[in-house]
Length: 148
Image (tube, rainbow, N blue to C red; front, side, top):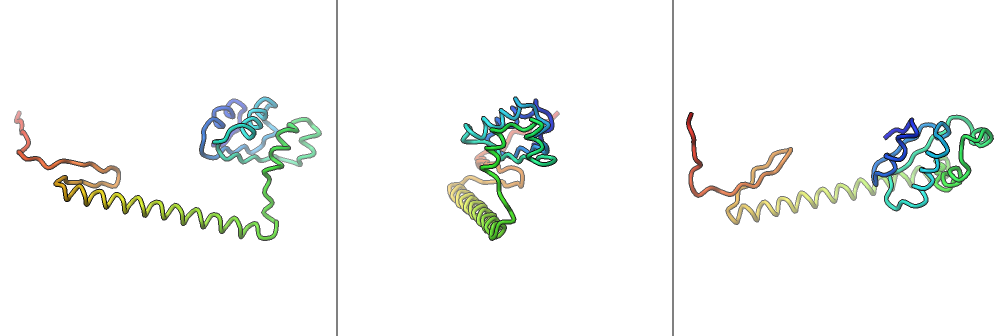
């Protein structure tokens, strides 16, 4: 979710997942910046917060458009992609996450196939669709047909 107005900050930070992108944090009010600080300090489950700043940090500090406590919190979480080995480390981490997700999906599919086989063996037919799966018991009698 991209944040451009101070009113959007509170709602966006309440969500436990996702990404909150703030293109220019210095354009937010000090109160909105305070909400970001509190979120970073206190919320265990919070969205990823990506903060941009147009211009130099020192200029924003000098003008008073960037809170010191927010600057401190952001500085702690700053990632220098030019540091030696950082890009490779991030690439390895992403690859591990992708492999873990693929393994979870494969396990879920295996479990679903196993369950479908068990249901079929017990006399329950399963109709699959890309959007939904429906379980339908086999009818022992023919369905009622009404004519108009």
